[in-house]
Image 1 (cartoon, rainbow, N blue to C red):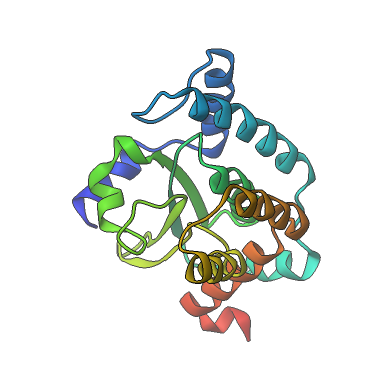
Image 2 (tube, rainbow, N blue to C red; image 1 turned 135 degrees about the vertical axis):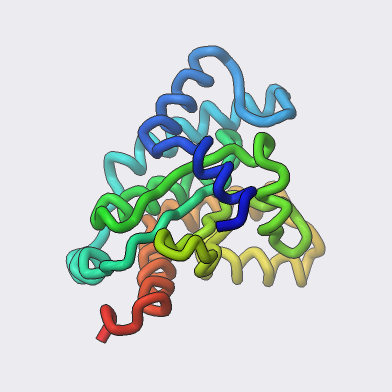
Length: 205
């Protein structure tokens, strides 16, 4: 296993610990990351509310549950995140719901600004976009694939807007939040089951 990835896993936290961290940050009027701006502190508060809601309401449909439960290779999902990241607040709770369905999937989280060498290995179009999921084969230590920073449909939505307008506007970002709320994690489930099928084709036959 790559030394940077190994160190990150050793210093990682569970989803439950991450949720506790975010809640403590809200109480302390603080945020993760190097930049401690008022806007990022406010985003941390907002994201705590989002994750609390998703933790209670997100569901994986029965067909996907059975498929995910049949995956029998041991893998680690190393998730790079920050408390202020809006996409992370929508994506990570559903990843947790999926990981909870199968003991072979171990989801661990690290903070981007504390692991610059790690995010530097997994840039998105040259940028440190998060959340980024590194999918690792536990037996070999091989990186099987990555996921993020957004679900596939949202990625296409963002890319089309950027191509037409050059940059994301405040209105677009609001529209993207509506997309997440309407999608309710369904695209994430589809994306992840597709990747699991790629890792282990026999389990999808």
